[in-house]
Image 1 (spheres, helix red, strand yellow):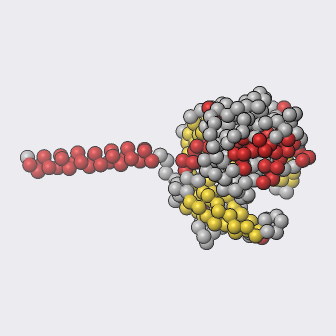
Image 2: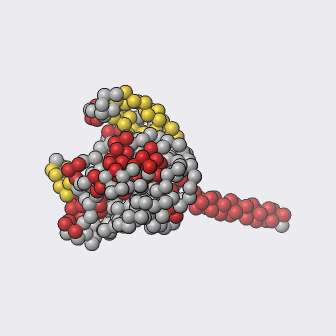
Length: 351
């Protein structure tokens, strides 16, 4: 009887241990491959960043600023499944879809094909209706990237477009910081894959093609209207793509609009910088800040028409103080060219 009792007790302990492991496994969420190469996104040497046949390279009209880092963007959609088009929001991807963004610095910005330093690759995969984040850090040897949720700081050297040698302190955000920028109405969503960002001409197989038409041919893109009816953001640093106002709005949309919009992380500010905003006050023009303090300094309005130097928007974009700067995550230096554009836009407003 004692032996049977002992065996029964051991059996209960075993069942409890398995149950505990299962609960802990659920708490951790989906497991990510340890190595980036295990995903199979690239052909041959992963550091060549050559997309595999089932992976599609894509571009945005105006990209997010990340301390002048270059980015490669890839999309994977399971065979036989389709993307649902949306006019204003990010497209609705089927389960199993993956978005991949790799950040790197060319050794010489004047000759980007002459070598680079790859810093990180961020993988977003949709599973059971939820977007999961898998961040990877590249090793110093540039042979592989490894799953790492903690974030870090990297020192990068390069030559900029003017021929000046630069030393960059690049901050890799941790996994929770990644989620914070992508949160909308309590859920994580992609930011870049929206019609207005993707509506452009790209080169594919050596030929200039409509990127959205390419997506439609490849992924279905159900509900896509005629291209003339699809919204399109300007290219912020291309004067031929739009007016100063259109280019400034495009920059604010991709860099600030995912948080500064209804349902976004900064919705309580009442400052809405996403592309669809048409109300001048919500856009910041003659809008007092919700809360005064260091972040507002002594300025009265988010945007004071005619006076960029008196506008809180410019003050926070120019600051590098963690308690003042905007955006809060993803940069350690100023985007000088963008500051010039936004200042020109505000200076041109009627006082």
